[in-house]
Amino acid sequence: MKSLEAFQYLLDHNLPLLVTFPFEEEKGHTITGKGICHIEKILNKSKVVLGRFNPQSLGHHLKKARTFQANFEIKEEPYFCAIEKLTASGSTIVTDIPASLNSSMRKFLRVEPSLKSPVKLYIYTSQHGTISFAVQDITEQGLSFITRTPLAIEDSFTCGLQIPIDKETFIFSNATVVYKIDSAEIYGRAKKRGVLNKGILYGLALFPHSEDVKRIRLYIINRDREIKKKIQKAR
Image (cartoon, rainbow, N blue to C red; front, side, top):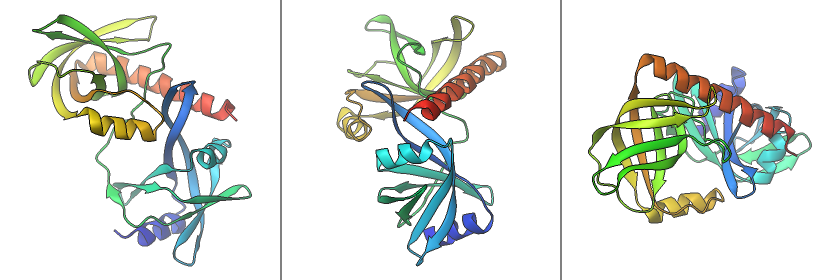
């Protein structure tokens, strides 16, 4: 689907955009902020006017970030695109319609833990025994973490997760490695977001017990609510 066609559909059907942007939760710790807006107008088939921001402070954060990602669904098909050129116009934002769209594969809410209450991953390795990592982001069915050196782990293994709910909750889950990205690419992505973590990014698919899925889901919902409140208060 072409970008103009997609944005016209969203306007005609009054459908929202879920936007994500870099948000500095604490000094030196940037996470992904989220919010909702709508297309108000299409100008000359090349620009869109965005408004009706929720939370109300969202427009302020998008103007400050200068770049963000827009996510939306059309006829149950998920898409996303990068928005990089924008100008403020009163209570609205005017931006170029992106050249292209991308199909999205993500089906679950993803959050990034806070520095003060991290999610910890525990893995057994043949080199060092049990080692732990701070989780970068987590969904009901997966997570990512960064390590400075490659790990000698099987493609499928059992891991432990320490989650900050009910004081502290520890669960076990089967896991598989689904991707591994080298340090150069990680640094490039991190630098754009204001994060200076260097290392190798591992992505894991998780296969927890159904009762443990509920615990992970509860944490994700609570953390997402916490982030939204911070975005609303930050000016």
